Length: 121
Length: 108
Image: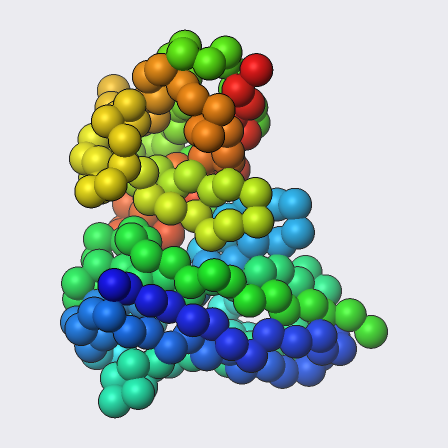
């Protein structure tokens, strides 16, 4: 079955960088768009970024544009989220989620268990 | 920026019908999706493309659309349905993903 496993979460100081990884298995990874979604403590879901099946298109929420970069390595069945210039408001559980074949329409039919990122001095 | 509006909370007694609404201007043009999130767990899709139910989701979950509002209906609510529910769609350009603020369903 579909499995998504996030890693790389940590406690980091404001202004520092962190890279999250999401290892996928159980499906043809290079056919699907992949997303990152986050949830601040006690808050709702916030979409972060999407990458098309072949990496040709990437889109970001305004709150992370210019600071975060989504990428993927289809040979390793892994999607990444490089987070730079981290702020306290980036503190959240980050979920990796499978999207549609190709890239759109945008939805999430499988989710990882989530990984906690804490930005604090 | 585009927004989806949900009521913060809905309460029902076991066996009753719960209806959770989600409003957004682009909903007539863009599909809506619904997710259930129990405490401490990852979200799970319960409705896709406005009205379709994924395999394994109980039949008591259904979706509908009327104009700029989509509705998640849970018939014969059970205690296990107590959770947060989020609607999700895309903006009119189909570029950006949007979530509603979430609705906490309480089973009395």
